[in-house]
Amino acid sequence: MKFAINIFLFLAAFTIYSAENRTYFCYKLKNPPVVNGQTNNSSDWNNIPEATGFLRAGTKTYATKQTSFKMGYTDDAIYLWVRCKEPDIDMVVSERGDKNGSIWSEDSITVFLFPQGHAEYFGFFINAIGSRFNAIGWGGKLPPQDDYDWQAATVKNEDSWNVEIRIPFSVLKTVPHDGDVWKGNVNREVITSGEETTWAYLGGSGFHDSENFATIVFKEKILSLEEKNTVEEEIDKQQEGLKQKIKDQISSCLEQTQALMGPLAASNAENRQKCSTLKEELDEISEKLQEKRSTPQEYLKLQTEARSLLQKANRMESTLIVRDLLQE
Image (cartoon, rainbow, N blue to C red; front, side, top):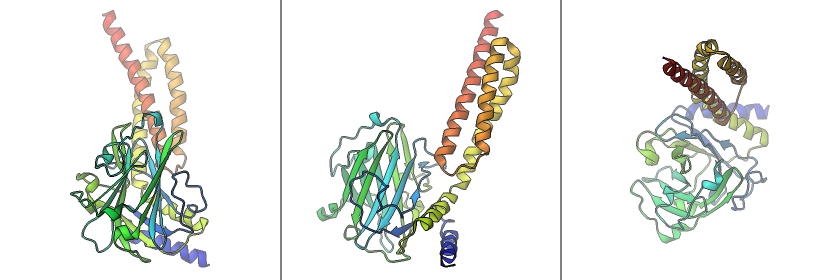
């Protein structure tokens, strides 16, 4: 009964906050994590919800290369763990060192935190080799020297790079209490694909669009694994509209492919055989589309497959047109 009441309170909280923008509930960590960037599978992070579904800045279109993060806190600091999916890991290049204001122009992560009652927000920038830079507000005012008393560590994996961050509340000049509401965001510069990506729905002012930062609600409770999974499901529901948009785009690609296949199959025996193969691929994607999928990455993968199928049909049509022109 107690767990059912807790779940009801979770759902009620999301109903209150999610209408503004995305909402992340920042829960208490069981223990302070070791900041090494290695993994989020340690027991220190197990009870902290993970959020994903990053968007291209200024749009509500999912980023091609996704990012996910966890955020938790202790009595003296806030912690983040960020995973940057990167199939082109060998192309990631970050060279600038600590306190270099151009870190953001490399493959990097930016964390914005806007504490309750503050006039300006804090920005923390970390590139893929763990170099740090931080600034205050839109103009990027440099903080006092002792405000570099925060830690970050990164690690590269086969298909991703991770960053782990510890920011003491002494740097943020405030300590949150249970129920406090901050604003903030996690952004990523993806140089390998030329994308600027963000978790919050930002407008046209770039990463510094503080009016549209996500909502961060601090919860002193230490979650059980079951409760953590429930919170993750509620975070994921904030993305349902965007998921439907991707599903609609996939359906459109399949419909366009289907429309091309009829005339192509009727043109000659070679195209008829190719269209038979396309039909098998189309049916397979259609079946996958009917299955329930929980993460944006799964829908993005299907979208890539559908677009590839449409491109094949378009190439076949172009070849046929050229052939007909040459025969005239």
